[in-house]
Amino acid sequence: MEILTDYQQYFEEALFASRQINGLSAGTISAVLNDVASAAIEQTKQLLAENQKDLDRMDSADPKFDRLKLTEARILDIAKEMVNVASLPNPLGHILSEKIMPNGLEISRISVPLGVVGVIYEARPNVTFDVFALCFKTGNVSVLKGGSDAEYSNKAIISLIHGVLQKHGLNANITVLLPSEREATEALFNAVGYIDVLIPRGSQQLINRVRQQARVPVIETGAGIVHTYFDDSGDLEQGAAIVFNAKTRRVSVCNALDCLIVHQNRLSELTRLVKPLAAKNVELFADELAFAVLENQYPAHLLHRACPEHFGTEFLSYKMAIKTVASFAEALNHIAVNGSKHSEAIITEDAARAAEFLNKVDAAAVYVNASTAFTDGAQFGLGAEIGISTQKLHARGPMGLSELTSYKWLVKGHGQVRNP
Image (cartoon, rainbow, N blue to C red; front, side):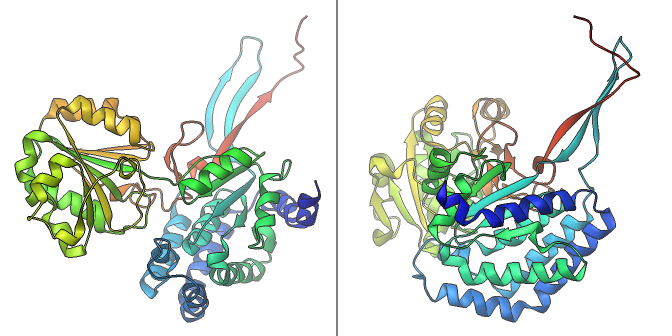
């Protein structure tokens, strides 16, 4: 199709680079990643200056603003994650299984790169670093389609990475940044034969669009409609700390808490459970029972009556819904109906209830007495992540190095032929 032809050179260059990247030594891979980390720190001022150009074009009240923003501390964290990825074991070439068949055929299964990984994302310049690091470590070429909101930031980051690759005598097209215009997105969706898998990172709207329009294979990631259920046996002090952290640590990320579910037997303690949130000006959208308890107890300008649309919403801001339930079964049902299969938590002192929650809740990460803020590749010991998969095929949860590999069968014979 014509739109693909207009961008075909990008895909051809990425496909050619994927043949060159195969076989790079572990030493070369580590050296490149460490040098990119060093360059990020050395070029912090330049990166922040380009990032500021993007920030100047966005309303600071936009939920995406925090995701778009780079700081010295965030760049330092990015560099640390890059170094960490460099130090992790290489997941390629592992023999996953091997056997000798009765006819003498020696059959083994070995881990290999996915190939050319496309990633489409919104205002998240850190993703540019993360995707390159994880893909490069696993022998994959990355084709990136960032949003126009982060155009200056992404170009600066890719320029930095290309400089390091060229310094090591490597093809710069090991990572490719597509132009920011929308036509490039359509071309990416239709790059059959070039893109082995496409991974969207962003809003539910973006993920839905990719799922509906892409002709290349897709792994869904990102959208997190996150619940925490405060059971009738939950510890109040522990619960307040968990809810506060899950909601306010960083509101613009997909593991942030969106809905607090409270057992009706604990409504009398709801005010104490959510009181710390007021210090962060968290707006609450409470159902009728919860609203009646919180009225005159929580700041009036931050307390609202919930509407049906508040449940099943990923807020990405200082907003949270509250749902009252009469039973554990009702809590499970609310999560099943309104969740996105990302991260769900229970606060309880009942071991049997905790075990049942872990067993019955269908999500990529299920927690007992802990904040959902831990759903993160680095926190799970993966070094970094390319996204949080909310589907079940190929990968689920934080996608680190092993999730960026596939496998192939190796068959060795001694002249065997198959009989009719």
